Image 1: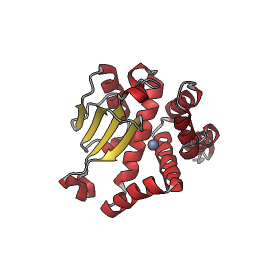
Image 2: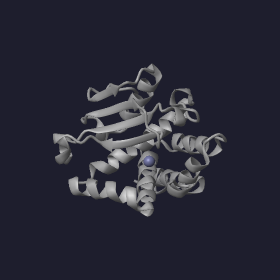
Image 3: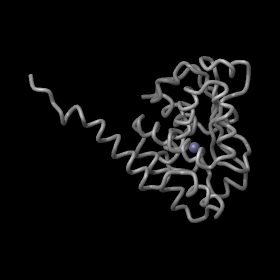
Length: 199
Ligand SMILES: [Zn+2]
């Protein structure tokens, strides 16, 4: 299952499990196999995990753009969510969602990326749409169970700060919406069996 990705780089990620789980998740995104992908741990106050293109010379050509997934070890966040301590399913669901964002970015040219960044910051409907796309892509890559586990964990986690939960409700798909996506995908997967062509 774990095909090593020659283009996968870890920055400040010590946990061998986190490295392994990320590589496993990435292995199921063939679109990303020839791309430089970074996983970095750093101190972020406002978010737990995020995915972004790396702004360097390669950024200006979609074909060569590099991408990075960051996760936080900032105390305010890790007081509530310590990525290393989460069950595998929850972490994989989270990574799958972030890689979903990257697949979404792959299709956006430079101007699209810039306006996407602005739209994300300025327009909550835009952000909701981006989150839906990321979840949809993760489900389409077979991570429905894991994304469901991540959502359930975050929603049920009683100690998360109120603001964080409010953001979850405002921007992210509800459990029911996600269930709808998973169901639709499962039905799509089953279509060939249902309409079996007789010989
Ligand atoms: Zn997201």
